[in-house]
Every structure is written in C-alpha cells, then in structure tokens.
Length: 325
Image (cartoon, rainbow, N blue to C red; front, top):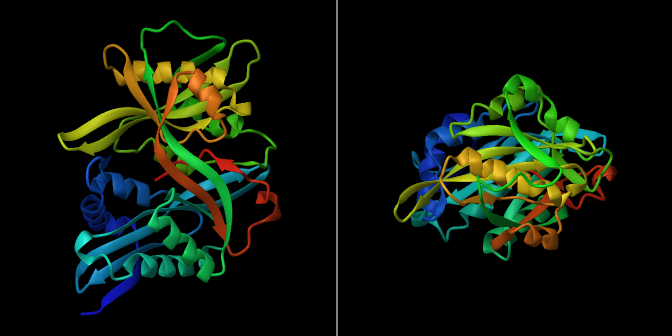
C-alpha cells in the first residue's frame, strides 16, 4: 500500500505525533507526551500553522509541523513559527519519507507568506535533507549560527551575585515583559515576541513553568527568561531537569547569568548544587559563558531563517533566542 502524505490539524494529531516521536527518539530524549504535543501544536496565531502526517493506510508513521510563534527583529515583527517535531517511525525509514514530509511542509509554508525558523542537528543527515527540501522549494536559507546546549552546576545557597537580581513574576505582572526586555533596534537578533494570547498560552504548559524578571540594580536595565521543568526520558525512566529558556537580556550581559541560574536552582527545589540546562544561549560569547561556570554539552543545532522572500531587515540577522523544539 502506498504511503499518503497529508496536511492535517496539528492539535488533532497530537496523540499520534506523540507516539511517532517517542518511537523515533530513543533515550535520552525529550518526553513527548500527548499533553505536551497538544500544547505545542495549539499555540494561537494569526496565520495557520501546518502539520504534515505520513499515513500507511490508517497508521500514522511520520510527522512534522510548524509550531506557531511570533518573532521580532529590530522594529519588524511577524507571525510565523518554528519547523519542529520531524520524525519517521523506525519501521518505515529508508523510504524517503522525511524528504516527502518536508516537501509537503514547504508547500504549506509558502501559503503562510512569512519566513519561518528551523533548526537541525549539526552535521546530521536530517539537516542535509531539510536544506535540500528548502532549496528545491525555492526558499532562501539565512544561517543563524550554532546552538549548543549548555549546563551549569548552580547553587541555590550561593550568595546573590553582582548587580543583577532575579525574581519570579506573576502572569498579570509579566505581560509584555519580553517586548520591554528585547534588544531594541538590533536587527542582528531574531527574538521571541509573543502576542498577548501566545504569552497566556505559555502559562498553560503542562510542564511546570514560571517567568523570571532580571534587573540590574545599578542601571535599571531589565531582562527576562522562562524557567521550565523539562522532562527527559532516560534508561531509568523520566527525569525532571530545571531549564532556562528564551533568555532575553539586553546587550547579552553575561553578568546577569549567575543570577538567572541561581534563581533556577532555587526554583528546582532540589537540595545542594543543581544541574540547570540551557538549550539556547544564542548571542552570549562562549568565553563569557565559561567564565560563569556554564559548560557546553554536545554539538547542538544549526539555525536558519527560511522563506521564499526574506525581508531586507532580516538580512543582518545572525542569531536568535527562540526555543529549539
């Protein structure tokens, strides 16, 4: 029986996507629960975000999607999304399904009419297939650099560091904090710039999640980041790890990071020094991270901004603080 490639409603296929991803990524990997997938695929947006499924008869065997997000670079903002959750079940690999999924997805992205962000594992076959699909579809691919994952052994009992302080803020007090914290007119950075509805949606994450506001007591400069209790599937079961994500600190001042990681260690509730992960610290110089005790783990991802027509204002973009999902 021929395998069919179809565009579907991502939220309605969340459970099938969960099965495909959990079969496709052996431990250690993100815990792709149906609840997590449903939350990711139901982000509110002004543009339709496509999801693509490969069906062998009635059996879903492959999946990919655009996860809705809103972006900003300098004064330019737009609704689009992140290409994510690309997977083919092990028993159906070697048939060109990944490329077929990407080709169908590219057609749907063209209808969105706005550039998307995409990430691929550095040096992987998957990244080569992804870029091949974009080239065939006539997309431009603007490189946004590398995104290794980082980890820090943070102490909840460490003394408060430097001029920067970090505190959790409630949802009503946090509205538009990312817009305030953003790096102003800097067009080199593509930033998360959630709409009000998207911002509220972040608080519906089935995982534990809180927002941290960072402030420099000397200058009054403010930044923000999310604290997320990331769930990993390991050989011994599901592990919960405190993570910092969507780190948005004006000027990428590394002096703010010790306060952020200390806040994450306190938030984790674990005694003693705690491992805190950071999937994306784009924009911070690697040397400054090492000086803060933040260490790289693994090769990580390569990022791209892709579209048929990329606005000139994005031509100087070199990095992003967007989640890698």
